[in-house]
Image (cartoon, rainbow, N blue to C red; front, side, top):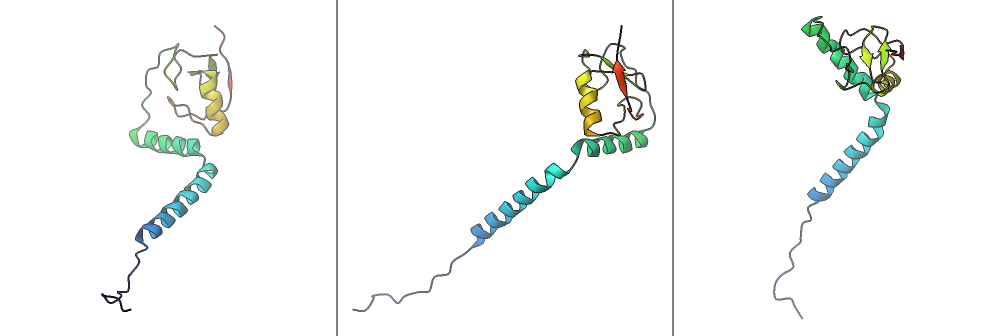
Length: 117
């Protein structure tokens, strides 16, 4: 028996497989590097550079509003620069970045205390 058509060599394309392998490798790299980056510190550095380019314009802040979230302060705290924060806003930011700058005056928040009315 002989085939009615001669056999043709087929060529396989691995484009899809190569693309999947590259994306898998890239995603694995990102997921292993992202936990090592301190994104809060990078954000604060960016804001500090932006603040220095714009200039030192003191913005008016309401006396009973958190300067970070612009909400009513939950467990109000006062920073070293005398601005009012929520406990959760200031504690999370100081914990994430020890050089956390105040969003209003750009002064480093070294310590904070409970605000007593």
